[in-house]
Amino acid sequence: MQRVDHSKNIIEVQGISFSYDGKVNVLKSITFAIHSGDYVGLIGPNGAGKTTLLKIMLGLLTPTKGEVRLFGQKINEFKDWYKVGYVPQKATHFDTGFPATVEEVVLMGRYAKRGLFSRTTEEDRKLTREALKQVDMWEYRRRLIGDLSGGQQQRVFIARAIVSQPEVIFLDEPTTGIDRQAQDDFYVLLRKLSGELGLTLVLISHDIKRVTDEVMHIAWIDRTLESYSSPEEYLRMRKEEQTVL
Image 1 (tube, rainbow, N blue to C red):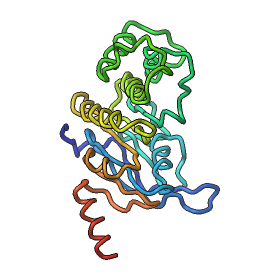
Image 2: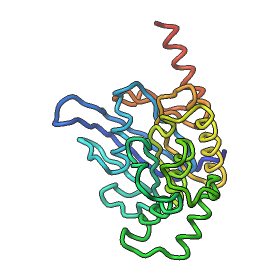
Image 3: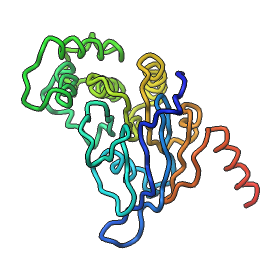
Image 4: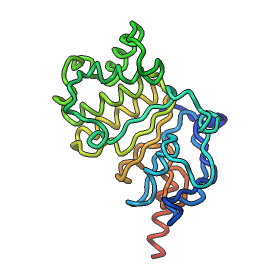
């Protein structure tokens, strides 16, 4: 795992609160920063606001209060979205029946940098090849995305995220619906990408035990930020709470 550069903030979440229709707060007064090279796990119970917070950090939702900065810029002024990769839950965000090859799916990731209607260049094809090799999927490049296993599809979606050469990747429950061996392989891949490409990773997961084994910092969300700490400190705090109860 690479070293974290604490002098360089990639994401700054400052006093974020959010509610739907001005009613019950989904999030309340959340503040933290994610540094360059970090690998952060966002964890918490169902309904804790994790995915809402992720959407706010991606600029998909506007907070009721507070602000988010990406690379030092207010999110509503941020233009360099090619620096940000996103890997969603595949089952709810991608139609695997779409007649696209693996190579074509990854090429779609170049649109963030070149624009939606730009023509594919030799550089795009070269970076697509490199991205697929990074995730060990180059030999499947001519396969239809729908013909792959769940674990293979997630590797392709990782390649699509890294082909624009981002500095940070957000992953929303990326191992949902894939078997245990594919999950193990997926986490090995994330460690490899973190080390070799120097990526900052932000991972949402319900698998708390696995996340604490993988990440460098834990953001424990339950509408508010309950803690932001190392996995070891998080586990110690939870053990102390259970002892008191």
